[in-house]
Each structure stands twice: as structure tokens, then as C-alpha cells.
Amino acid sequence: MHEFEKAVFVVGATATGKTALAHLIADRLKQHGQTCELVNIDAFQFYRGVTAGTAKPEAQERLHYSYHGIDVLEPLESMDAARYAEFVWSVCRDVAGRGHLPVCVGGSGLYLRSVLHGLDPLPPRHDELRNMFRASAAAWGWPELHRWLALLDPERAAQLHPNDKTRIERALEIYFQLPEGVTSQSLLTKSKKLSEQEQLGQTFIIRVDCADTVLKNRINTRIDEMFAHGWLDEVIALRAQLGPILLESQAFKAIGYREIWAWLDAFEASPESAQGSLSQIRQACAGALRERIATLTWQYVRRQRTWNAKERCDWAVDSTHWAPDQFSWDNAFVDFLSK
RNA sequence: GGCGCUUUAGCUCAGUCGGUAGAGCAGUAGAUUGAAAAUCUACGUGUCCCCAGUUCGAUUCUGGGAGGCGCCA
Figure 1 (cartoon, chains in turn blue, purple):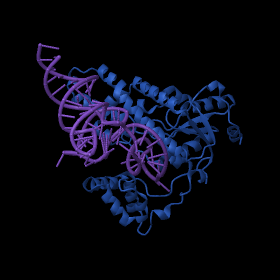
Figure 2 (figure 1 turned 120 degrees about the horizontal axis):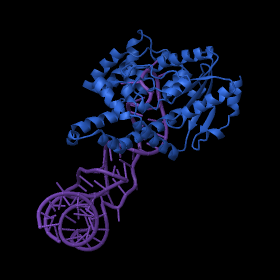
Figure 3 (figure 1 turned 30 degrees about the horizontal axis):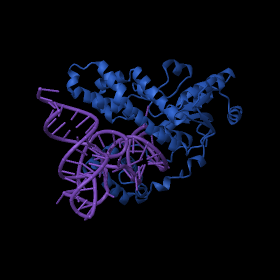
Figure 4 (figure 1 turned 45 degrees about the horizontal axis):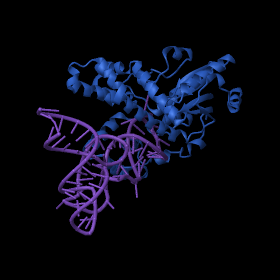
């Protein structure tokens, strides 16, 4: 099974330098006559208007490296992992058709997984069903829906904790879309460890990581840069344009957006807002809010590392002392490129 | 200087009508099959500010001291 021919993946936790490494690879290969095109595998960079907080590459970089998969959705639209994999595969085929090399960059574990290995043929996302389940859960609580699931799909229910609302909801959504007599478990074939699962093409996986203290500093610096790039104004504008419905959107699940929103609410409700100026808001952003966002980002790093540890790694790059001019190719990577 | 409040986990604070204590957040580990930067799970010994007194027993009561906050001077 080949969903795409040949692709390089640059993966790793946030702020470890995936993008810089991908650009370096593209530049070096260009010198040897090989053109790369970059493909975003980040679950938030595809939303238009949600920019400052998602560390998207600069506009010139997007052109220069022929980026795909950035700003392809409106802020209130949503994506799912299976659709996303289809998109990446088709982009990679196009890129290969031009004789270029696709380099996929990103840190979203489930999305990487679905691109690298594919997902089993379960029924798709179904928002009407989800809304029904959510209404029931609001009345009865998720443990009650878990008990219900235990009657309908006992095998799946046994795997899920009664509080795991995301997965209970998904399991019910699957159950109600399957023909009678077909169980979700009977459709599952991908139960092997990720590192042992079949690959859907010829892939080379580069994993970037960085020492904790350095990474924490980079995260802080990056958050400062995000605010300097107008993160706050971006949230203010989106809020005025689209309103509270944004809080329900997938795009706004990106770290920091809901936190900034809540801070704006609190600020407007406070007495200081009467004579409050934007500079006061910016000051506050440099304080407690910034801390909170750094904490959330670090927690995310930990989750990414837990996930990444289970995926194959062909070349581990340590970006702690990042020096592009001293960077040398890994032999396995050279072999992969020449194949 | 006087009066009041306060001192308990890395932080914010509960609580023990006297039997050595627990939430949230943080932290650590793990999970993850179409929301994934999401979501979920597990993990809690800390001179209960210090000294003395009462008591079988004090983090808890009493007295003194020290730090913090507030009000009055």
C-alpha cells in the first residue's frame, strides 16, 4: 500500500527547532539540485486568522519553501485526522509529480500517526450526533453515557475511563453510524505498536529534541515574540468579528487563545478598564498571562514527548546547541535521499 | 506606637470542637484510532512560623516572640 512515494518527516516537541531544521534541509538539498516543498503537519496552522499564537512561518518563507497546508481553513471550520491525512497524501503525490521532495513538518501526534500509518475505516466525525451526546452529558454527566456505551459497545467501553468525554463521544458516534451487527472492534487492524506498524510509503523520520532548560527558555522567548507579532490584537479582532462562538471552535483550542480571551473578559469587567489603555493590557500580557501560557506549553511538550517516544525515529537531532553551519548529514539520511 | 487579621505542600488556601492534615494549581509519569496545542488517568511526610505552658497527647487551647497585611495614630 502506497499512499505517497517518498517523504521526509521532521517531528518533535514544540519550539525544538523543527521548522529551522526543515528549512536548513531544503536549503542544503537545493545546493545539490534537489528541490523540497514543505508540508505542514500541525493541527492549528491551517486556520486562517489564527496566526501569531501558532508560530506559522513568515509569509516570505511560505513562498520560498513552497509551503502547503497553512491557512487552508476558516477559523470556524474544523478538520479531522483522516481528512487531513488524505490531504497530505495528495499534496505529497503532487510534489513528487513535480520531481520535488516533500518534507512534512509538525508535532501533532495523532495527525502524524494518521499520515504515516493511516487510520482504520471507522465512520467519520458526525457533528449532529456529537451535539446530541453533549446535550445528554450536560444533563446526566459523562459517566452515565459511559454506562450507556457499555450496553452498546462493551468492548470499547471497557477501554475507556467514565470521565473520558472525548473518546466516549467518539465511541458512541461510531456505534450509531455502523450497520447493525458490525462492531467497532471488528474494524480495527492497527493495534500493533506504532514503531511496528506498516508505513504507507517510503519515509524518513527525523526527530528533533532539546535539553529542558534550553527548551524552556526558547518557549519563553517565543511567547514574547508572539505578543510582539500582535497576538493580542489578533484575539481582539477575532473576538469583535466572530464573537463567543469562537470559544467552541477547534482553532481556539490552540494554547493561549482562550487564556487571552478570558483575560480580556476579566479586564473589561474590572474597574480599571474605564481608564484602561492597551498598554496596560500589554503589560499584563507580559506578566501572569505569559506565565500561564508558558506552563501550558511545557505541559504540551511533555505530552508530545510521550507520544513521540512510541513512533519510529530514523535520525535523532539534538538542537540544544543549534549551529546550522556545523550541521552534518546523518548517513542513513544520505542513503535515504539517494535511493 | 496602638488595635485587628494572618502564618499549614513549590504557590493560593481549606481543616483538625486537642489524637501529627487535604483541595485546587504547579510538578512527575502514563494513555491516546477522524476535537489531538484537545481529552483523560495515576502519583501527596509537609519542622502545620518559633519558644514556653496546660494535657496521656498541641498544628489545634493559653502566654510570649518573630514575619506579613490592614486600620488608627
